[in-house]
Length: 453
Ligand SMILES: [Ca+2]
Ligand SMILES: [Ca+2]
Ligand SMILES: [Ca+2]
Image 1 (cartoon, protein in one colour):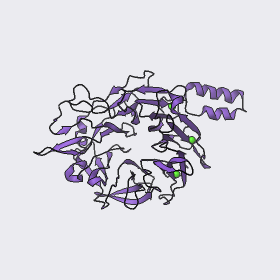
Image 2: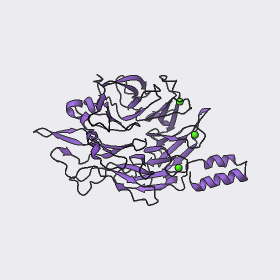
Image 3: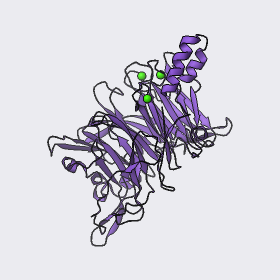
């Protein structure tokens, strides 16, 4: 909410107690004065986004992945993709590129051409947290015959986005995806978790496309204090992709211990309906505690997963997107399944299903948006990037439960004429301009992102 809307709210409260409806409207995210940032045409700038808190300056940065971007001039490649960092300014083109690739890289071993760097980006979210970004098409050339293995590679940077020598032992995040370990496949990291020392890398292509999740625990003060965990061979065949989306939190299956949540939208163990796995770490192994199943083949159930406590019972609730769900009879497309936590576990069926318009990709992205209307309950945003010019819908929660209808529908065309796929990616829950109201960063496939406040 802008200062203008806050003033409006105060004026309405003082002068017209009967205008409560207008006051509620004023509580919405402002779409008249969005902060826009633009990248190069064709770079897919905005395919991934993350809000990042820079500790030293106590400011927020908008991190934007541009996986089809040209290579930097000193890198021996034409097109590598990249990651951008944008300040909260009105200048639409003042984003700066984060230095990730080594200009002296050995091209006979490492192939960065077309590696889709920036396909995913995550900020740890905790004070001083680091940043992780990946390119899932990085190729390693092995042995005398220079065999090509598309293993993907992730890059970790400090809170200030700089490479830190002390982080050197963190920089081998392609290791778990090496062919010797995981056979064929690439790493697509989607999240690094809130505790500073943990990095979670989902690798959907490893183990002959079964996918896996690799978790690294590292102690920043003790160089060799490192632990790694992953699934042992899951013995599931066919196109089984785990690790497509990954998140992790406490207060999900246990108040004390973290639970990792990973989406497997192509899980075909039984019927390719997709699944979401709730996982705990047990020594070296990751153990599946609960599996939630999608309801339709090809719906991509688990494409996005987010947790937030919607009913204030101190247990995280789970939101799962299935953007390609469709129902011809009801004219709906895309679904978000909401699982309310039953005090440390989930019923196998969802508590509520939200559905979007036909062919909209509703649920492609989901963000815990913080408490947008300041009523003490957490709210969330869902992207439907393929509906007209793209759309983001906001749902609020309350003691009565989740609102049946969205409290706000934001269309791409109302935010900027640049948008045709508004809402492809989302990041929220942080107050970037210090007015106490959380803000929402919205990405697209239109080399444009918008910060809504
Ligand atoms: Ca809850
Ligand atoms: Ca709220
Ligand atoms: Ca704000």
